Image (tube, rainbow, N blue to C red; front, side):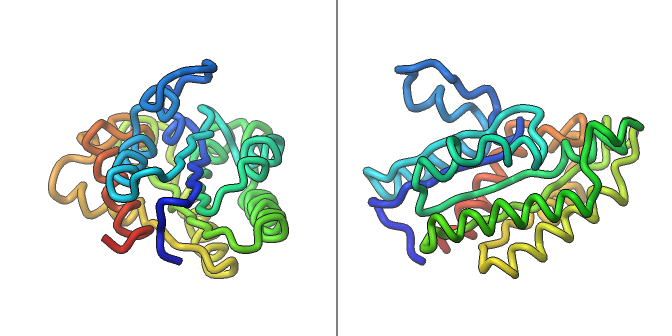
Length: 215
């Protein structure tokens, strides 16, 4: 589906998407989008397609189960025509990585809830273009301290499988960061292994824009 100026694009996810966005009524366009890849990709969209509507509803700390609780208000009610989702790292980090599985989600539950969200979205918005982003880490910081692998790899595989099932565009962020980490140290892209640096966010925005628009 080609992008047009009449599209409504929604970025959903956790702190990587949130990236300090303002929740204040009347905040300007820059602050409501935060300072990360969503804001950067949104700016590229607005430059390429003047008049396009772009929303950011990422919330720091969210797991897939948190998305489920707010999906109607923060996704379906916005009637997006393009819906981008990046979720999964907190399902690992808050759970198995910290030794508190009750605060995360099992891989099986992650898959079940994610599939339910996508099913509900297809039913409510049958023509929406889904964009599923690959959960990612870099080999630095908390990722090494808490040993996120192989758990996060399994969630990545689930997300890619769901992208195929639901005819979604797939944005391979983890693969991108693995390639970039051969050019510069992993910490240059995400010092704690999870939250990208400004140049990490820029690389994400560029890849997202290329996958979604073909440009």
